[in-house]
Length: 205
Image (spheres, rainbow, N blue to C red):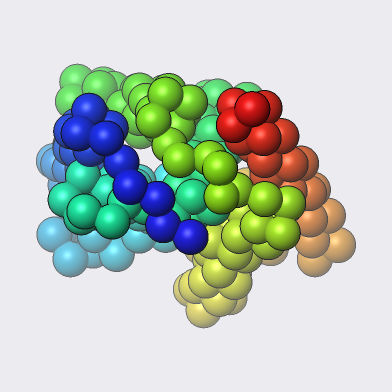
């Protein structure tokens, strides 16, 4: 269900959309400059393999839409997207931060993608997001995007043999291990969804 936003919520949403876009653009420029993937098209396609990048693009679209439209945003979707950004940050800092070292604009983009924008999304949700229409029946919404992404990433990996993250790399791990890893992440996201709903219920008192 859609809920209207205050003017302050709308302009801060636009700031977050711009931060997310800027972080993705900076990482694109870094990858292009270092020829990590190749030319412009190859860089765009290579970056589109990652949950972090695609989720940030979802943030750009969602928060820009929230800033521009008069009838607000969907309570469940904005909460689910915020949780996805939390997962982006936690998984990166706990499991992935030592895999690649960035310098220059890449280091700034890295911090933007994995620290600044996720924190900004959480703070915005706490301060401005509509919460009164968020219910436990909305829990499936919290895993829709992750499930779509997993199907997409595994399909791409099966086709070209390249997987975006070590914990889902079927070229290095058995199907059982990968399935267990992904199921664990989805369970964590469902638990996170419960926490978001509980927080919304508490805030709405």
